[in-house]
Length: 497
Image (cartoon, rainbow, N blue to C red; front, top):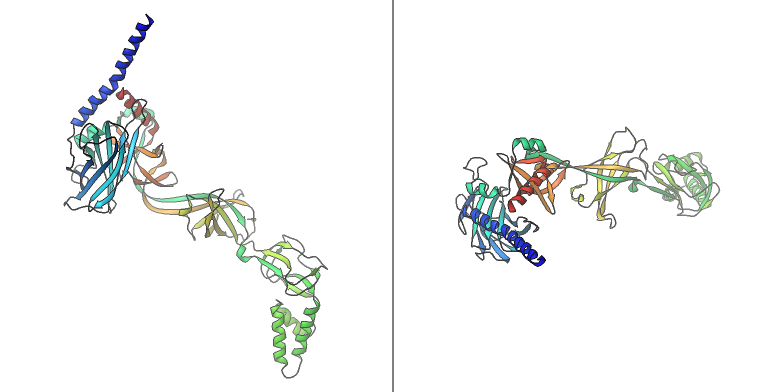
């Protein structure tokens, strides 16, 4: 008894399993019959005449070759175009969507070839995208089957002489398989909003974390070219601000005192004393004794036991290595001084954003102080190497700091603005992500919404640059597209069943 029931259930399951394939064959036959097989014949698509053939003529599972011949309205070969093809089969039941892409190369004038592969037998859609050398975009849709030879033309970009937005009856029949029709009431209920694709002036803003640092090109070290002892310390702690020409300390050096006396004797000597005095003065200058100090020695006629050492730059003391009474050797570093106006701001920019950065572009620095206005600097250097751990590149900007409120070591935010010029753009909200694909829904009119693959460029604010797949004036869904996609999948699944 149980065995009989089991056999009945198995027979019922086999009958149900046969139903989808049968309906698929019937649909495939009826849809193919609405369009003519055009293997090798030309179709008028946009401003082009396009002829496409498959090798072998009847597609096979495995490797195939598509050949596209392009002519303009006068019949002249169209050279230098960029041609691509997407061969796809929609998802059915538990079977996922399958696709194969072909990139064409121009084998001779106006003729392009691409290899692609078919994973299984059945009916496949072929979407051909053409971009001519002058930037015009043209698209055409075909259908091929492993059960028959040639390709069936479905539709494409309307010709310039036809009514705007017009498509052939065959194109409407094929497009309807991928579109979803939603009445106005339903669209309002699920919040569908649309907007036209427009050309806009776009600016990319790069936001990066930055840190404040001293200007390395203006730092100074104070070291003397003679040995001696420190007498008085005027600048006596690290962090003290000093001005250029300010006395840092006074020193005593026997050899320096002897050089001063030789200079004074030469000044008051007889014939030839002027040359000796000039030589003695030059020797003291080479020891970095200030000309004003030598003038004071000459005027007083006395050598200075406590010789003042002055700051060569303005800034803050980073390092102090002497105290009153300590001895020093020639070449020993006594002080390190760095300027605090202007300062460097070093920003870490991610590697995918680095191509947008240019030397000389404005850098807006956001300080952590509430209410303080943004200050603007300029990019002065882009490091040619990446940090291997963070995969970021250092971008250096020079920023004003007259009040010294930007402290070296402080963290700030850096905004870098790069103008992209006028570009075709769509809102970020219009884009759906499906793996490596980017999809938008295009409003075809009459309540019909069709999915379309697009190629996107840089993101500028909440806008994406459109590289391919859309034309200016196309109407795309900008709100409620997830619900539209869900409804399209539901209706597609219902139709397949």
